[in-house]
Length: 146
Image 1: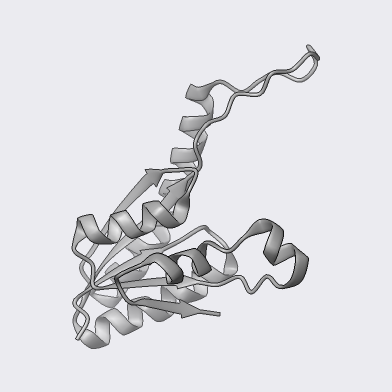
Image 2: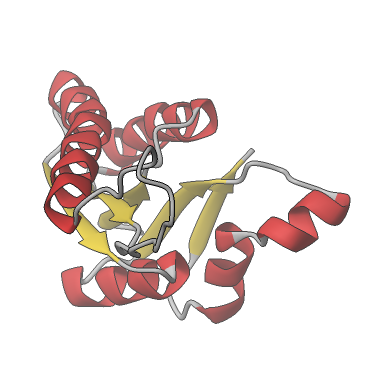
């Protein structure tokens, strides 16, 4: 059975629901969890308008890391309450699905648990689906919550 779940969070309502269900699953199977949040890379914007200040990389990193800590604290709290062993981490990548798959491999996870936002049609096509990309490329089984 599964002994180490990689549990993704993006702070959305869908991921919050997936966290609760995944922690319960981990408790029932006596698995441990590693909570992960993927941060976007910093991309500097060139602007001609003085009224539109550009965020510095340091500010962006600080804000992103604070947001990651907030999202990951939800996983830590749920795991602690359920008595499930938990570790958390964040990683920076412009290709979240690649970072997720690499993290699962590096941490020795045997299941990736994540939410699907259920985007359809043009919106789903244009925005893409990180969940779909993980499903298509992962060697590790993926449990998707809708």
